[in-house]
Length: 391
Image (cartoon, rainbow, N blue to C red; front, side, top):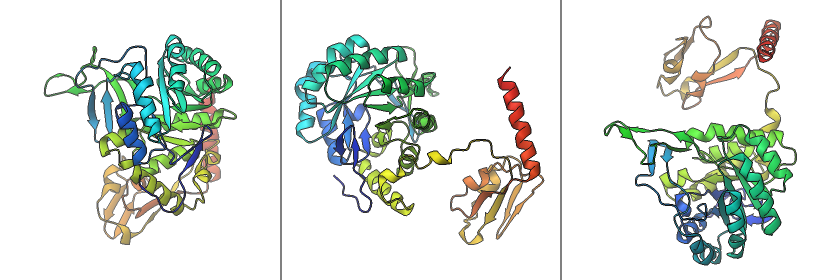
């Protein structure tokens, strides 16, 4: 396990002390005891088993593939070990090795009834319920809470219409925590050389994980933190590829951070890098503890649209002359003639993309104080939005 310097990144989750805020989400790396033990030794605070069902999965060949450098597609199913193997060997071995084990159980009320008590007896410290549909999750939760003594977490899907409302219902039914979100899909990737879908599933479709789903998961985690009174033990899953990604989730209210795709692509030891970099980043940004960062962005969500102009600043000494600022401007309003930066104010719409794409921060932006004219524009825009919303 990699030691971290600076801010302590251990956390309390569902009444259990975890060595780090990073949880290995259910997936290929937690295929069995050896995978979970490696994850624990690398520095994960907890590990989630592959989803245990009544029957072991039979996966098609080529069931995980590349979409881009940081995004994957998969048509992998649930655990391919028989459930008895999980009870008798995989969970007990991981627990004996010191791992905090979260047993993933899916996907129906009948399966929850058949599995959750055996997962508890096997030594799992928590249970995570996984369902394909919202209407089956609450019956699974009700049964689990009535029949096991360990904490029960509900895993939500970003494919559902209103995951935040489901989270609220889960807490009302006694959930000890919530995980958000599962993979997104179905999606499609075509192998252009062989003129067929990349995935070998029955329909060629798969499920998306990695960086591409991060903005979706971030919004859903924020929705839960902002809209569910008394929410607790929320851990995010979806697109955490860096310490900065992890901190974004913490700042919108997540208490722990699920990781899977990043450690598939960069190796299980990458969690040690994430821990070190998160500790350093928290310190750099002036946080005294990890807990101070949880929800730090929530008070700063806007209550209304900001209608004004951007003020731009340019520091030539930091400029690398890459020209990205001019390249990405949709309105051709910016031109770099180093060491001078030109902006055609008549063309600029204050979209801010140029400053966002500056790799060194040589070009930066800030909001100007709105004028009376800006206020009138904002009022007219809000009135129009209200009108069309009522149609």
